[in-house]
Image (cartoon, rainbow, N blue to C red; front, side, top):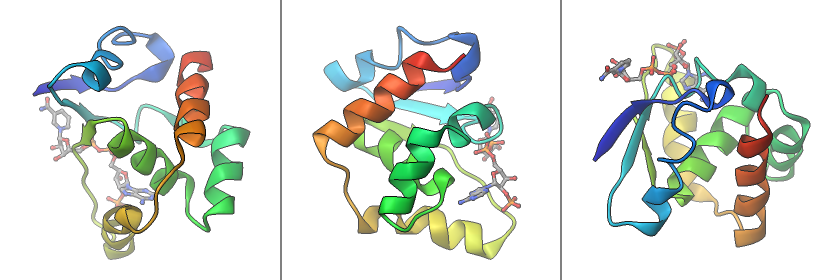
Length: 108
Ligand SMILES: NC(=O)c1ccc[n+]([C@@H]2O[C@H](COP(=O)([O-])OP(=O)(O)OC[C@H]3O[C@@H](n4cnc5c(N)ncnc54)[C@H](OP(=O)(O)O)[C@@H]3O)[C@@H](O)[C@H]2O)c1
């Protein structure tokens, strides 16, 4: 398990995260929501979230789980906990995962 600060903007661990898809290991993120407001506000992610009737945070978590990221999550608000647990109710297609992966690579 690799646990790392997840900060798409700084490109800090860009080379490490994709390796989790290839290797038998898990990447565990923290600061996933806190450090990535640009990702959560990206039109492509918002559009895909709307397609599934989910929030941007749920869509981001769904993508990360589908690509072998283990998200270390926290919440005070009960609705957040319920939303985060319900990401397992839907699945993304390989093409949708690919487009969200491309979004992370484009993140400024
Ligand atoms: N090992 C380390 O060095 C390290 C470092 C940092 C953090 N951590 C741990 O990692 C875990 C995650 O903490 P983090 O700060 O990194 O978490 P985070 O994912 O960056 O942000 C958590 C925040 O996101 C909000 N949230 C959660 N689900 C949401 C949703 N569905 N929609 C909108 N907002 C949502 C929460 O709001 P509410 O609270 O209002 O519900 C909370 O304010 C914690 O257990 C923390 O202790 C470990």
